[in-house]
Length: 354
Image (cartoon, rainbow, N blue to C red; front, side):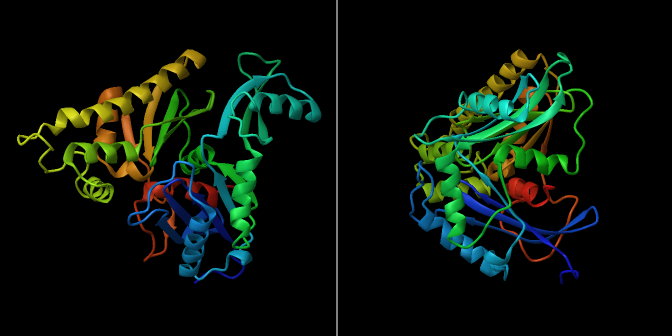
């Protein structure tokens, strides 16, 4: 039962493969998870759409989730959500301190360097983080941008269920916020957060004194599923089930190889994943001269595959943790599909301070 005067906070993550919702109430500095739920966007024989799910697919799922929670979307006043996709970017830059009007113009020009054009204008926000340590006459600025077409499409989808978000964030920042809400950044070095989703893995690098950086790589859960399909002659649904139940080294005969041999064939996709992560880290070192990666945090739907943290630990000789965003929150019993790490962005949104 909710306390008198409690104010629900809703974190909504409409991903490329599933929709996650986290509803919390705050009491002092503590959070209680009242509801959490997840629904796949595609089911049965539905084919994954590379251009993103249609509004006609998303709206019924949202209505079903909030009906399960016994909440009316139009009555929720504290909703935070994210926009995702290749036309979303976040970058920390060094800039001259300017008056607001000049800074607005400068950040708009900066954002256009990082956003693929879709024929619409650019939606930009930024935050001045403070004085640059190396250049005291300049400031560090975090620039966040997307296209107005993507932003407006997301808002229009929510209007279909009469929901009006008070915050629209982006996935990397929601993920990092979820982690930093209960964990201090290292005094020296940086943390590498890997969000292993369906079609992409988001990499966010951050520390107390070092530049924030985010990038997406095209190797994630779907690539692991496709490898199982190819090696074992499975259809998509079968491969997803095998991956979920047995991981990437199932006890199944490999197609065309009665003696097996999966280990070498399967290793290639893991190595490709590792190579992409390593390429990102090398770029970060080149840009910042920071090479002390203190720990790796793994989130997302594929975080439950033991092969991923095991491989990362061996490849980078580093501590690897599968992130549970609810570890330091009270969670109401009887709710929550999937694994905790899949809710990292939604949880980060729900506990985000205004």
